[in-house]
Image 1 (tube, each protein chain N blue to C red):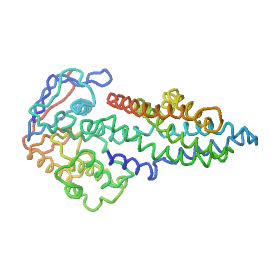
Image 2: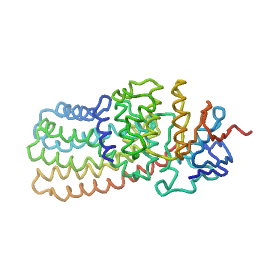
Image 3: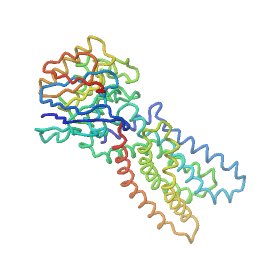
Image 4: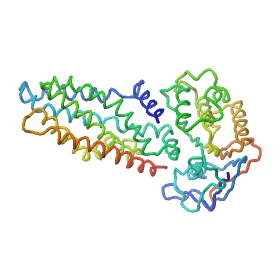
Length: 221
Length: 202
């Protein structure tokens, strides 16, 4: 399983892996917001966490369609499914999700403090947003894997995956943003939404791969 | 081990492709599937591997040993695609599949020698020619041990010398008690080979 993780990591980093697409998209979204909203620093600081979260959410949905499609095109998916007695297919999917998250989504989390400065956020807010992104974005990848598995046979499945997955990621967005606000605005709680966010990630870490494995198992043609 | 199919029927998108196929292959034997294009050779192999559900009938293995309880766990599947990543080197690809599928009789270097690709393991898979890619995919069969080989047009793109070398590899596999099931247009030159003719019954 470590072999699969390392292979996906290598593939993501090498040329054509598309690991940086998400970060560049994220950067483009966040960098244009201050121009659109105008020079109202208080307003920017107030909407900062929400904008960062929406940007990260959309950016992390970008590369998901290649998660299984690339495997399917070169025939690797057949062999991954074939070895389901040695490696439980849901666990194989889980490891692929982790590798995808490490390569494509973790850079978003790393970039978010810098982009937080663009939004005139204070250090606490930046820290809280980065932390909630770190905890919350795996959930998006896990449930996105289920969408990617359903759309694996569709040649232009990328947009379909986003549409399929977006409604399920809304709770993650809500609790991620409310935890970020909770850290900055005094009466609002930080820990309650943060813990629900962590619970969502753990829940989807189980449900997403199992659903994806089921879809892959029956996508044979 | 014995691979048995009874009244096996397969379909693609609701259209029957082949019907009522029976065969039985045991250790050391091979089954060569011939037939015109569209006669269902690939579909048969995919049904046997379990990628497609059988429309009717069944395929199973009997006299199993506990290492390989099911067909999926006992077989190598070599389809039209080579299941190798173009961005990784040949060796990286093979090392991954060996670690994922388990150790075989040969290590990476020996397997590359056996298919005549020694000395190019460091090249990215994408740099290889069609025939070399196919040979690298064949090396994948050697680095992990599976008793049953399901091969779909295994010699596509191979030159004469490589075909003969591959026949030798299949012969060694059968001699060691393995089973080869290959869909092909070319005679593979195997001993103890059964033939299954497929064609549209109309």
